[in-house]
Amino acid sequence: MASISPTPGSTEPEGQDKSLGELLSVVTSDLQTLFRKEVELAKAEIREEAGKAGKAAGMYGGAGFAGYMVLLFLSLAALFGLANVMDEAWAALIVTAIWAVAAAVLYQKGRAHMRSVSPKPEQTVETMKENAEWARHPTE
Image (cartoon, rainbow, N blue to C red; front, side, top):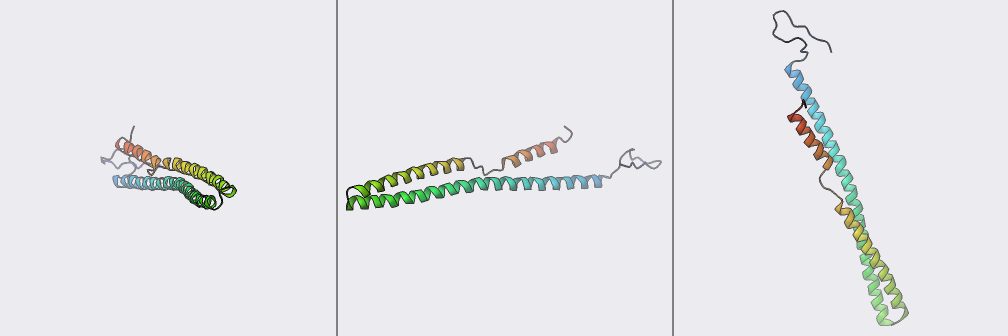
């Protein structure tokens, strides 16, 4: 960086290269860049959490379909049970039990995934706290 030598009789200290306005401009530009990067980070975190929520929603959808199948096969089992008290009713009840187990497993997995979803962008909040601390004490 080139140093501007002060003119004789000047009160400007030697080695001061930029005016206050230029320094303020640099700081403002840096803050804008920092803010832009923080927004990008927040968007990335929200996208990631939305993906998790989408998977959990898919599992809830699977549990809903499995629950529908439980009702369908329970209805068929009741129908076969009333119409013919033997073989077809037992077969329908076995299929119904399998669908009930599938529904329970999908529901539990969906519930576990949904509990791991965080609506708050944790990393962005942490870096914003660090930025605020730095802004208060930039020389530390």
